[in-house]
Length: 392
Image 1 (cartoon, rainbow, N blue to C red):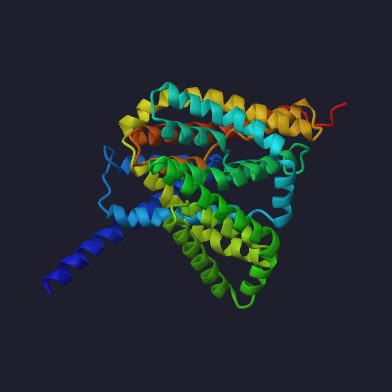
Image 2 (spheres, helix red, strand yellow):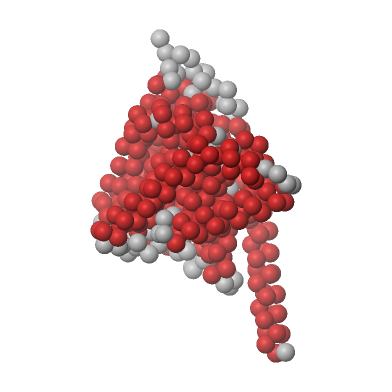
């Protein structure tokens, strides 16, 4: 009886803490909406405030928060996959090599070089290159919608580049996860090989058999579809993790495999769950960072802000120029792509076990904070530039 009473008291404390955290996250989300910025930076700051060295140390089991955060990553990547149709995938794979190459060189190389310059191990430098490489699809899409630029000439080039980056992450994340494990060369090569085969197989399924999978899931109501997609995401993610392939990529590829009406229904049903669990993921990432480490990472993050901004300006300019967009539209394309977010945090979280893992997390948090705020502001200022027209 005493044991039950103690357990009940612990549960009551946990419920109160989790409830307070949820209410704080809700308030931060509302604040972000009023400020017309992404809520990601605010969630990271909230995590900092309740972690080690924060204002109020959260006492809820870290294992529980970590599990919820990991589910948040899976749902976040699932919904990213659900944004793309099979035709968009084909178009991205068919036409994206030149643009994707310029984007990788302009944005991965600076982060990788800075990681080596500050004395980090090779694996951490590779992860930092990934952090600076990929734009935030969520923030960029939100900016385009709020600034009413979906009909602009440069917008298709921006969206196509986001597709290319997300597809590139399907290869990069498993490779980065294998490197972060610190295994020997043979084990790393084997893990990377398995990951690439798995990615290839699921991409093939998405392109060739996505309609059949969707037709299997389509019958029934929303409840059955939600449970089926959620269960399939956890199942594929768990299998991927078992073979030391990123579980997040397994979830991303599940989203890619769905198509048609099922894709649209699943996206609408999963979105509230994603928002809840993803908020906890960003909170947990900030939770693991000491405020002093974040302050120490601001100098490196500021350098990356300049290099990363220039890199996105270059890749956005190139992508828009290939589409025949004039200079004002090329500038808007570049600055719109500046913001980094979900993928950058996911990549950095892979390096938690590295010697430079804490520094990587701190620099990434500071970099995401800076770009997620500066990027949308720069995009809004670029709106003063006249609408793009086709170059002569």
